[in-house]
Image (cartoon, rainbow, N blue to C red; front, side, top):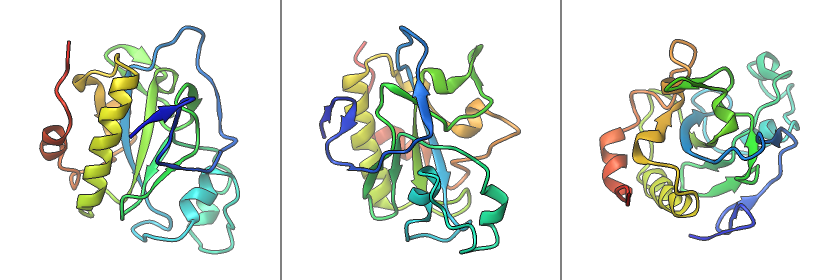
Length: 184
């Protein structure tokens, strides 16, 4: 995998309006793993992409009325089959973490890259998702060397009590086996 101009060459580019600039001189130093499915626990279709691009047809499902006023995004989405969609360049601040803190640092959007897995807390992720996520992680860490293994976290790690994703179905030990060790 390759990154050019803060975009992953292997990802389909679908720009989201839901981002802004990172604080000046803020280094990318964290990767946050999330999950999303729209409607909940239903996979496929373009609802996630539509949601991150503020184009979700809220009449398509009753749940969408609950999220119609949200403006959120992530840097990347890994679909069930391993397909990649990028919404925000990595050097910009995507709106994925919300109210968050890690090791005393608040506002994790300022220094993190958010990757959404199409999934749900209690639905097993696919082998393709683990493989692609590991490849993306290794590529990101080569490009942004401040992302150490201990700073690859779940949304639940930076927003405990508020968020639960990627959930108990995410196999952290397996994922950590797939990624390269810290070089430092």
